[in-house]
Image (cartoon, rainbow over all chains, first blue to last red; front, side):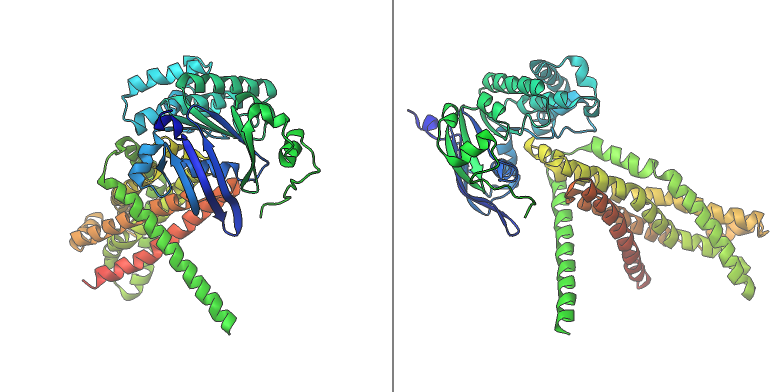
Length: 261
Length: 258
């Protein structure tokens, strides 16, 4: 096996993150192989979004190492960070589409502003990506506020894959959608990630979605990875945290915090 | 006594921390001007928004300010038989002081609040994080065009406000106070120096920068959903208004000592 293939695409080790007195990430260790689809599950407030934001560089961890293709990314300068961002695509939980821009401009934003592509060429690519997520060219001329929640998720997915990134992050991709639209989004995620040939990291508490899109699942609890393994293993493990979470039981080792610390 | 001193010390430290954060925010945003990419279209949009769309509100306040000023100064000067000084007082007060301050405060209420609300909403809906993930520096894309537009546009707006304000004083002096129009205009021009107008425009540039900086800073750092955006908007307008008045005194003192 070559060094490139052996090096994890993403390697997170000993990452700690505090918000004031709250210790959100307490030494997270996890790797993601090239081309793999990793899903991180866990209850609300366990640090899933913070973990993804640390990997993206939107938050800086207080301790630990985050390597992309074997290169340390914690503490990167502004210019190096902007270059690294070109490897990433991100689908935000609330879609995070720019209200002031039309749909096609949202999809083409990274190509035009991030990579300096001409608007006509970027529009062609944006319309092709919209078609890939099942939206016609007429949708491209609308504003995000004119779209339903499911359509906004599709546009956000088109934007995430528009620049054909090497790594795509999905933050709660099916939250707030009905089961049918959630399944449509799951299928689109699988299709798009395969077409682009990207490595995918998703965070969710939707087990149906996790089972469908994951090659490997990891569970985060109180800022630590308490279990990880192939998707098929999730129903066979005797890990009490996974067992309680997967079966949605109130009784067990996971005690939900009633209010944020 | 010790707890009182500790409270004063904590307040002072919080003030210094806040000042440092705002200064750092401004320096980091302005540093983006040194390297491409630039966003002239976004800056033009902000110039139109700050300048053109603020004209009605600034023009209206300027004309009434000039009118009130003529009436009030006439009331005072007539007691000393110095009514002829009304034209000079109106033009100097408007160009050196009231034009920039009134326009600054109006723009703080109209534009500063809108900037804080727009950028704050982008913050709480993850749109600013989305910009970063799309290889776009949010300070360069969102903040720098607004800072430069504020800096460049308010002087132009104040120049128009000066003219409208002086015209307001002229209207009242001629139609209500019975001044001779040509004598009034002659006294307006005779005692006005270029320095009076330029000092006012320098103030306007500083006020424009302050309004944009406060709007962007409070919006950029807003937290906690709709309530946080509302707070950011309030902070932006209040802090810009206070800073305009404080800076106005400091600049006036600096110009006065020349």
